Amino acid sequence: MIKRLFNIARSEFNDLVKKEKSVPLPEPDFFETHQEESDPLGRFYANLEISVGSDRETIKTAWKTQLKKYHPDLHGSDPEKKQIAEELTRKLNEAYRTLDSTFKKK
Image 1: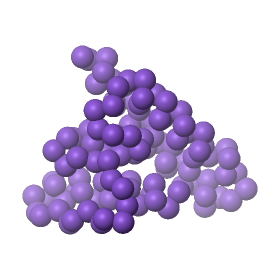
Image 2 (image 1 turned 30 degrees about the vertical axis):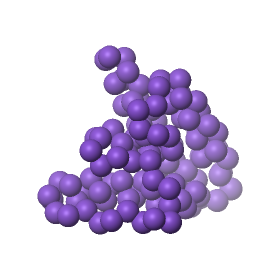
Image 3 (image 1 turned 90 degrees about the vertical axis):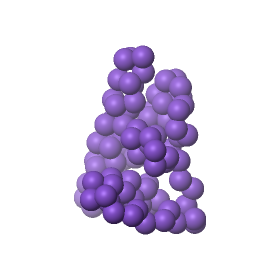
């Protein structure tokens, strides 16, 4: 869960840095990254932990797998973990909706 939070925070930070048009920080080499800087949808692929350009079926499978792992109902006993899981679930749903809509447009 910590790795996922780090990846999400990094993608949000990179988006912020891009908006300010400053030089982005180098990616840490101790985490595997799936995000391509040139692709604006890269952070959504990173949130689903799949490679950029994956097909629609892979996106749906990854979304379901991640939801099973991070669903808030699984962390109901600890309020802090539940809050984190709710945030992750929101990000996963946003990523899935955005990527799925791009495939529908094509």
